[in-house]
Length: 187
Image (cartoon, rainbow, N blue to C red; front, side, top):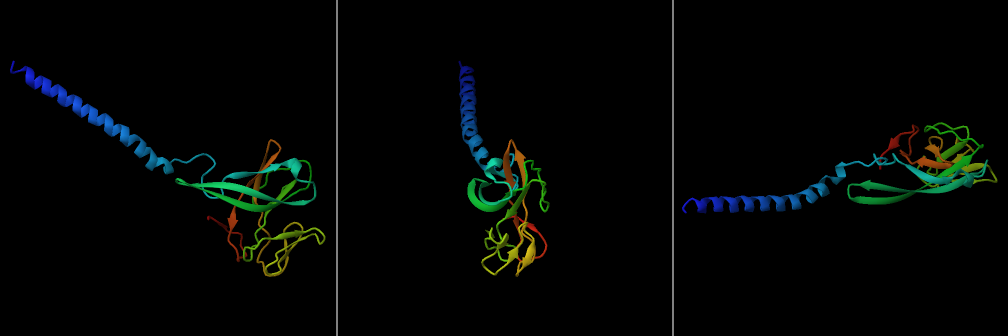
């Protein structure tokens, strides 16, 4: 009878340790998932400004006319989601747009940021004069975004875009203002 007691105690000790281990795992797995979630990257959210935003169907852009479009972007930084709106000027030249790299004009579409490269003021299109004008300090840009006069140090900044299933997708990018070189920045 003296041998039966240590086996029962050993078995109960084993069950107690097993129960404690299961409870620790039940608490630890969600906690680890919570703390490690920001390390996992989702496709298309590699960093600020790296994902494309839907600007709308190509049929919404009349041929030969500039149209101001607001892009709504969602940026994720860990657990924090931030919504930002950016305005871009879009003009469709013809029926067959081809994707463009920044700084290049495609055969069919031109996408320009509405931010003045001088001090960051919003640039307006004046169709009666066929030019862009910055109301803050009088910067003037031609119909294709080339600097004509005023204090802006460079042309209007073009943005990268893609056409997917007859919809225009634009990649927003911020650029350093007040300098003559086109330098991308992360915000």
